[in-house]
Length: 362
Ligand code: F6P
Image 1 (cartoon, rainbow, N blue to C red):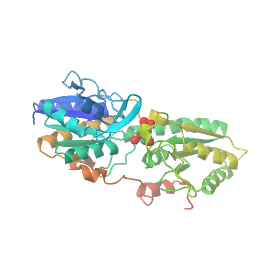
Image 2 (image 1 turned 90 degrees about the vertical axis):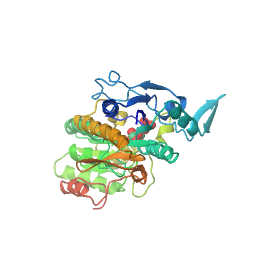
Image 3 (image 1 turned 60 degrees about the vertical axis):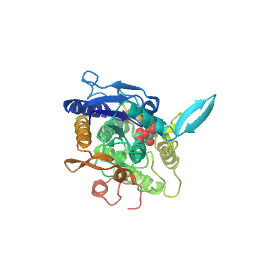
Image 4 (image 1 turned 45 degrees about the vertical axis):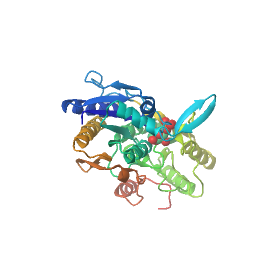
């Protein structure tokens, strides 16, 4: 292995730059040259890249975003272009492979979540040596205990809850906080426990508004005249459908609005008319900014492990954390299903034990 390429795909995530830095530094130590494609798979198809030497990656591990840029909609197997005003999709994967061959690359590291790793897997099937790095604030990838970026998002959401607490208490209000997570409730669950939420609504446990109302009124009877509700963007009412806007094809939506958080707030407001309800949609604040130390360290470990996997010839794999060990697992294992919260898990039980309601009839 003499020359590798890397790219960051899908939504950005705190810790991307720390991964880029760790890969580059480790590779350079092995005498391997690294280039970084610009704007994810789009740059791979369009052959846009920069050299990642020591100077390029210096001082970036604490910074947010990605120095390489990223893009959501650019799958080389269904590449999006606009020709004479008409949107088109075409398979440009051969062009991407030809670019890699022309550059003399011995392989590609894809730093991405579910979508990007699915694309990476298709390139692996085409014979490209691939190693993946699990990135997403949603923490919804199988085959790893945790993805980098998740704990920073939890930290941000938890801090937001601390702030909402003081204003909720002062005004005797119900505060609803909508957090991200796509089809999984990991951010809501962790932030809700950490931030002392009274109710946590997650997609894995469909909620019933009667149960939410009864938790709030029970608190009032106990003299606690405010409540904090955390709603995962994928939360589902027991008797309803997913009302989440933009959730299925988040990447293709030009505009992103709040969703279920607002519905929950409206429903509470309509049922408890003497109580004031306010909603906050935390949105992309969870993705931006500096990674917390945990994610800087995890990202560094993942970056080092990705290069080690290359040097060991472990292609078609993704680096993952299992307990305290980093290991390379087949990409297929990581993408076979979305990892979601188990309603019977210890963490959910612990949350219930300290009085948190999941809006179900438990
Ligand atoms: O997967 C990360 C994530 O932030 C999800 O939590 C969220 O549903 C989605 O991406 C938002 O995507 P976009 O940046 O396209 O609005």
